[in-house]
Length: 300
Length: 300
Image (cartoon, rainbow over all chains, first blue to last red; front, side, top):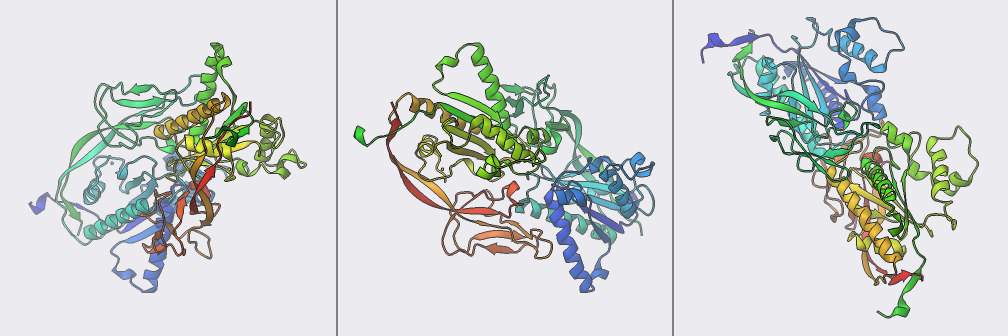
């Protein structure tokens, strides 16, 4: 590798780890509380100067956490738009809209030089997706390198933004194996940041990325809009296993099998995610593609 | 078997199958809706005269079902007490207290000769309990015979009352395998009732029953009352597998293992049930005992 091919990027001085953006996704809630406790002990020991990046731990939606609900008034995860963050707002606005502006004050302002450099938002799903990283662009080099470091591939401002999505875990439940997987995921992510900040050169290479193509809704009764089928038992828990045209997709409540009518094989994910019933999503389908990532290092 | 040893019991003329007592336990909700649909078709075909028992299908808590919540104001399952069903009640009483009196009008009055003969209440749990029948007395012959018929053993007025509890399924999610297990469970239960009503003699014999001994709560922070540990990964999903003193019970969020300090081996169940966090129950422990059931038949 020749050094002049290496892209230089600024240091990731400030990282935020956010749990409880959805108040009933408990791994992130308990992990953030635990990390705060550990952090306090570290400060007491005056060991914080060893840290090459400041890490801010945030419980994003404290009211929803207290109520054990996904959200109080509206989905917080849909409130970080320019209009909501910057437009006029009444005191009577939905709680999550007000809270998104508070968070923008703490971690942003979004898009400004004062904003944190990397946000890692912790989520759980009832889908059997394992540890899965979601990014919002496929040329997000930092995120692609972190994906590679975690040996997990999945779809992807100058604030880099990752969602760490782990399942299968029922909402409002904490399963120790899922909690531990998230803890290790966050530790590895922070290890990567420290390693990057300390000047290590990361080689370029291919990373497998799943890019969302479309959503599929449950079959519904045209009058009541109630669902009339569940995910087929042969598809349930088979996230990221290729789904071919003709494969079983749903089983109706009277026992009939409905098959996948698409014309191309695609990768299903978010299969039977609890919170997506109301959004009209039974599963999502993705295309798998290797993305070439650049070699890079911190700007010195 | 000598015929004079056979206990004679009255016919089970009226059976109720109830789903959605907890509005986010979806198998029962969708199964009752499906059975109502099938029942309507049967009535259209005028096939209903073949039925040796009338089966009433009930959605117990329609408001909670609509909201996708366990309950609106209070747990409906705790509202069938003499005081709530028969005492004075204001219009401003919690919704579930008002609803329990409506249900008592439809299926009861509880304890009266007009009440239905058998109630089967359908539930889901996030615990890995399989298809599990819960009765409220261990000398409930009808229920013990149904348990045997279903080849499931588990811990039972002259209204016989069974709770059919099936998991693991996250709340607010429907999994096809769990739905199908519940459908078969209800079909077998109704087959047994038809068989009993038509005069078949059921032999006596032993049935394994798990009787609840005690509940164990999660370890909690003495100040905040937040839980500080999850069910240990070696115990998670191992409902009805014997737990010995010294076996791992919890894993704290800092990674420490806490063991079972009891003096006798017992059978854990309802391990990590979502709705029991608020009740302070991480798991329940039971003793297993064979109960001798009487031979019996319908009173002719």
